[in-house]
Structure formats: C-alpha cells, structure tokens
Length: 124
Image (cartoon, rainbow, N blue to C red; front, top):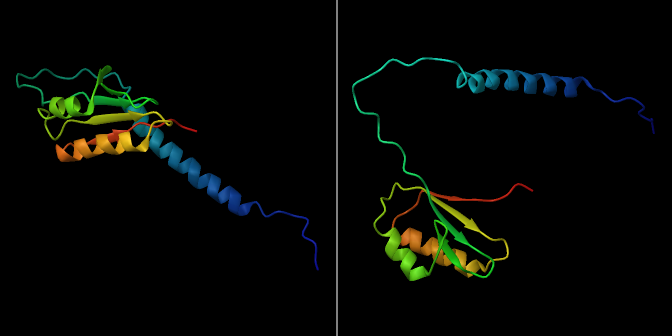
C-alpha cells in the first residue's frame, strides 16, 4: 500500500475564494443602509407599519405570560380574539416547561387564525 504524505489544498482554496466572493457581494448590501441620504419630503401619509409583535411566554412551572403579565389559558384566548390575523406573535417557552403547555398555546393561536408565529430560541 502506498503511503500518502501530502494533502491537496487546491479544492480548499477554491472553496475559500467562492466564500470570499459571497462575503464581498453581500457586504455592499449591508453598507447600503448606513449611507447618509437626506430623503425628500412628501405630503402623503406613510404606509401602515407592521404592528409590534405580541409576546407570549411560558416559564418552567407552566405559568403563561402575555406581554409580561401573568395570564391563564382561557383569558389568553379572550385577549387574543380581538387581534388581526396579521399580528405577529412571538412565543418564548422555557426548555424545562411541559410540552403540553406549549401545545395548548399553539392550539389557541391556530383556533384564532393567528399564524404569524415566531418561536424564540437561543443559539447553542
């Protein structure tokens, strides 16, 4: 059996050049938002902005919070019933919380047609 003492680095260099090209291409889009541009004035009303997300949280003991205030599941359903279906919902659930509590909240949201849901996680 022939022993291989060298490593071919040509493919590695090719990959690095492609990644460099991607980084350089996206860097121009990121810098675009920092340009000092004075926008002209207009008399028309600005477009309707996206509403702030409603924050729902479940702690490890199963306590439910709506925008930082403790609430039970039936009251959550009543308070969310008035929201538009386009209202964004941010759901934060403790990792040690019971999965049934999570499913109950998702069931309430689906029943009300609130499907613009984001589930917050942490990076590992």
